[in-house]
Image: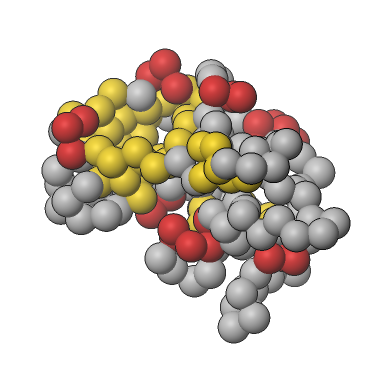
Length: 180
């Protein structure tokens, strides 16, 4: 499915092809630099959805083919990489995950990570194409949700304190929503 997206002010527009276009996964993660005794730090730095989503305490991303991503207004993009403590301690190092924003209006557009180089992860709120309605939702990283957030969990929804059992691809295939 071809997805068209843009920022609020129109300075950045993009398109990409998605085999997994259903916006089903709500991520409540917080900024991953918690550290501290006994706490695992995510090396990719993907634990920032709650802070950058600007909405109800979670972000919804979908998955698209990275090699299909076409961008106009690239000069208006601002990449952001979370700084994390080095594995050996000491100086901070950038995460592998890069999130892209419009530098004019601040709209969060997509994320990419070389760990999954074949994919990019557009944020559902930046997509202009009408997306399919999910038959059920997955609520992930609930252990990190803000205290004021009351997840709107449907009777068919799945809930996870950390990562879900299925990847975005596996979920789409299980529910026969994968687009070939």
